[in-house]
Image 1: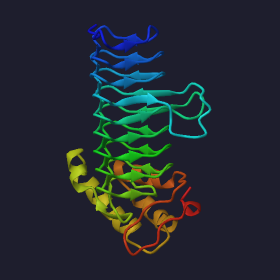
Image 2: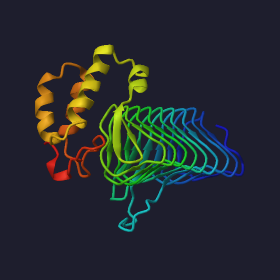
Image 3: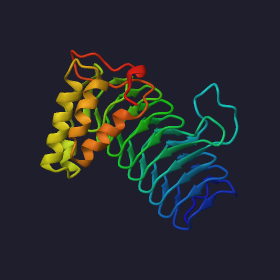
Image 4: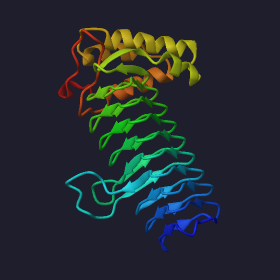
Length: 269
């Protein structure tokens, strides 16, 4: 197990023999690091963090540090990072804020330089957070979502699978699966390129297109539009979209331009 002599590794840390800890890196107590994971020089892995296999923690990245939350009582909480996830320079991931809670980052994620994952976020697999993308606490991000550069996401927002957030967006409402959102908090259509790359069939893509027109390009209340659309769904992505919209929302759901937004109390249950 190559540990540079200048690295500081707590005796209680559990490191796989194939893990690599670079010069001046810090690994605190009760940390677990999986096989093939590399902590680059000056990387910081804080107390209560678990890193999966083949992760990369680049210089000056901080994983598992205490949350930026005045309500944090100082009691133990955790951070978990899945296999093959990359955390680039100066990016930060903070542990949970309530005692015993966990911030979760799934496998195969890529968090670019200066990206931030706040306390109690739940990030699914293959999520990309570009440079300067900032997730507040308690944000949920679905599989293969793309958070572009300098996007800021309000706490308790949900971002659906394969959603794409345009650069510089201020995201204060839920972004439905498979949709693209731009800086004025409006949906501009399905993430067609993402759907194709994910292997969605022509029929699946057509249903998502129809969902966009039926649910988000209408002045009808989303609850009403969803009641009409749901019985017509015949593909798996369509059913997952309906499931997302039926789930409770604390922030409401973004819609297209020139339509009203769904207020939190109007969310379909």
